Length: 258
Ligand code: PEP
Image (cartoon, rainbow, N blue to C red):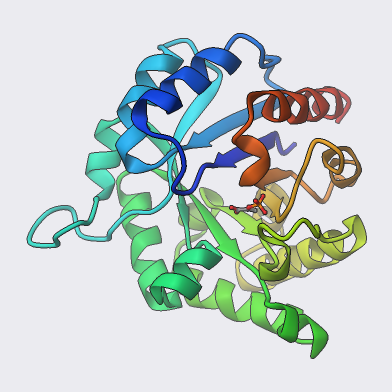
């Protein structure tokens, strides 16, 4: 069984003190049960304050939005996996489309980051997704396979088992136009087929695949109705306490029935 995972990607939003205030506002309002796992991925500068605000017994895990693959050295401005681990991070988002398009990240670098995360027992959330024109040209599956292959080629079964994939169509991120459940399900099926053919049916069955792109309190219910969708990676709708708590409540009510 795949536990639902709800990940809040705050992107470059909230100072350290704003982040702590937000966590204090939500931490006792989130329904806590093993049916749903939560991750908050604040900016690096707020990891420490979010960790302190979460306290030791929280059901919310800490995540980072990126890392650099070397452990230490002359890499001005970068943050390494051991640094994130030391701050209490359990997850790290890698290959987000904003990193790919705005900062030029390529599959080979994303693979190095994945390997660094795994070497330090951070759970990677690998983001993949097609652009609008790629979808229009019927290339969605091809793009997903290429991104998966580029990031995961050569990894062991054990490593791939630790990775969560987030299917995030680029045209849906931050646009207010989410994929339909059918579109997401068909992409998730293609991802599972690729994992089964490249690694094993067991890996394909046990891997969590999240949907991301304009998820809101209004559409989360429909998306999670499909058991192909194991949770969501959420940007804008996670920045307001009420909307994050509403999404968590919906996920919880679906999670306990799965
Ligand atoms: C994201 O940041 O990965 C994302 C999906 O953003 P939004 O929910 O705002 O579309």
